[in-house]
Length: 91
Image 1 (cartoon, rainbow, N blue to C red):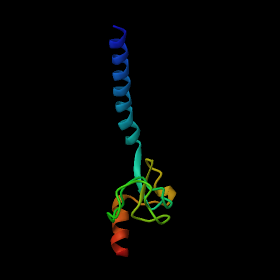
Image 2: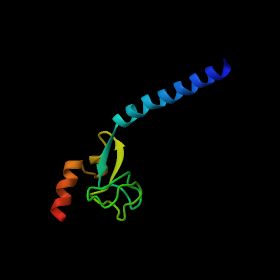
Image 3: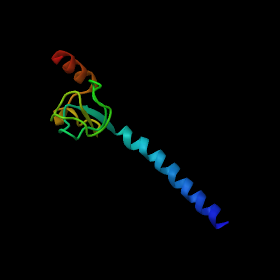
Image 4: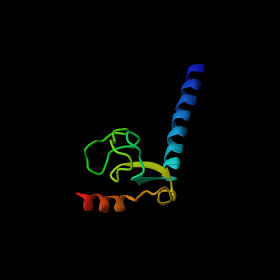
């Protein structure tokens, strides 16, 4: 019976972690053009890589980082649509 209780507690912990992650992500937004080289959070607009930490330039408008919602513009960053427009203008 103890193993069953332990398994139930472990399952409850996993479910609770899964529920809180989307709530935290909801308070974040992608901010383009503020990542230092090697500090991007995921794939870039150009499609030249698909992983975090692979940017090669500081403040590349095609690279993004997650920031608190509403802070991107104060950090000098761009929304995705603004970044796409800037990226196309420089291509």
